[in-house]
Length: 616
Image 1 (cartoon, rainbow, N blue to C red):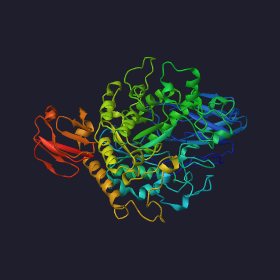
Image 2: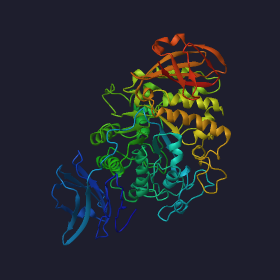
Image 3: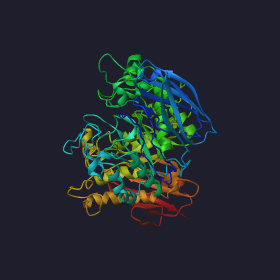
Image 4: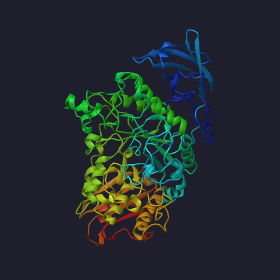
């Protein structure tokens, strides 16, 4: 994004209390200055400005503003960059001040804004077991504004016929279907990255970021992103932003003029990562395997960022903080957490927690075993002395056990056995649990088209320990297998010429409505189920493919029974579970609404789940 004048979107959001003034640059020398604004009152009083412009290193930097001091100005090997390190005292007042760039008789003035910090309406609340996250791929959810399907400032144009192309979904499409999300009962939105991805092709997914401070114009703009967050907060919902530290897109503006050779992890020829996540924690790993994981490129169009460069480390951490403060985010999902430099990622966590205690940060940690995953979710240092400081991880071990348990001839002992390994984690209750996402085959496809098994997996994910996440469209039985473009399919009704609208009851099939309403009932009951939000988990060894567990606190107790077998059980004896049933005489099946008047023997139809809210 090279412009003679750098300007920011004017944002007016009442709950944010934030107003961004356009930055004034009276010279054509300065092409980029980032972060574009900052805030007073940050706990970390240091601020690094990245300044990019023709031979900008020839200039001295001066600032005259009470409470702002230029601590140092660092030059790098590329003379078109300066890194200016400011100290912003805790008593500094918000306002606009001038940064002067002086070279002999030439003097450039650049106005920079310091804002008051956001008054967070959900400060300290974060995201926890009371929430259910709904993951959306924005390009494939709904097209609310066809006028931005293709834009002048981006290369790839809309082509809905191409499964790997841009389909036109945008932020307005999500806003237009907000009532669907509310009706369904989710509490939190997670969007695949919405920042600019300016590449010739395959840019819809969002993970090839070309501007870390700009919403992709085909999704809308920064103001539209804030509108969605505002709408969510005003309706008691939260928003998680997908961020990427491991790589950028080949179309990023700095790729034409890198600050330094070590800004990227560069190889003599294109070298792809080995995608072997366990190499990051393996105590016996070879240097070559470790380097290939952490420094190899995801793809030829996704340059691998070298976070060992101290300026880039600071740039990325500041960018993360910038979006939290600017947009009032409730959480961050960090892509490919195990790939970048481990020390930097730990310091990123520390920096975020310093500014936003108890802020939700979930790491994408693709590990098939709990022992591997525990390297990242551990409250004490690992044997090598490393502690990640991460407060939530993607629970892939449990995901794979869900698939094994509910596949044809699967056994729920898989769930029991996996959860029995929770002792390896620092806090398993913070694990993000899921039965599908944008990187794997659709859930229904994984379960061989068995709708009853899909419902069982939903009942389990929404009642076990952890923070549940559902992938958009699984509730209406989307069933494609990979490649990626197919599993990230368009939601029916999100486009004006669609033959049906699955956002409405009338537009869904009988079977789709059955599953939608099934999950909806659990989700809306779950909003007030404290035993699920914060309760302990006690489970019993499964027998005959029936799994029984309890979620309970001092005031509530919920019994969950999953009959994963093909047998109707007419008299399922509850005597074995009397230790967990003590003091309770009856309950309500929250799925059917039927009362269970006695807790001795119950009927269990095949391939069904019972979620029983117990009472005295």
